[in-house]
Image (cartoon, rainbow, N blue to C red; front, side, top):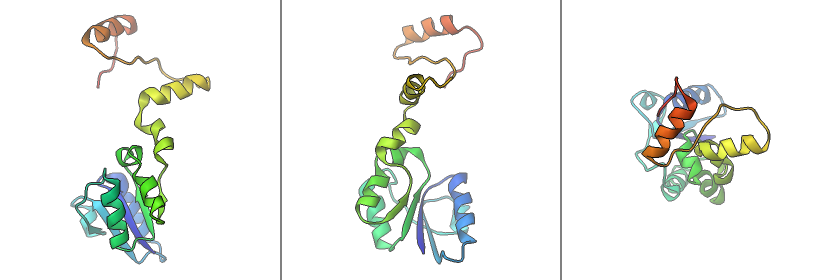
Length: 143
């Protein structure tokens, strides 16, 4: 089996190391990869947020399976495009990935399902931030 892994982090490196042990896998590729993954798989410099670029690469290298690690390509529908081209893909659809790509959406889903979760607030202005910090009190996290 020929496998293309999408991503450049430790998660994708670990996936490659695991896939390398599978006797059914005879070719590994990664896009974009990093210095560590270069020792495990053939690397390709493509825009992994572009469904067209990822699908074209998968077709060009004759991938049997594409594994997408990062949430951004998933949230942009790259897995949908790969599957639409007839190539097996491990990764949720754009619709399903929304829960990972949007924390506000995830909080709404949890509230609707009555799942306990930490308090949160969507901040859309500096004034809103000050008011929210006053309500939450210390310690407050900021990203």
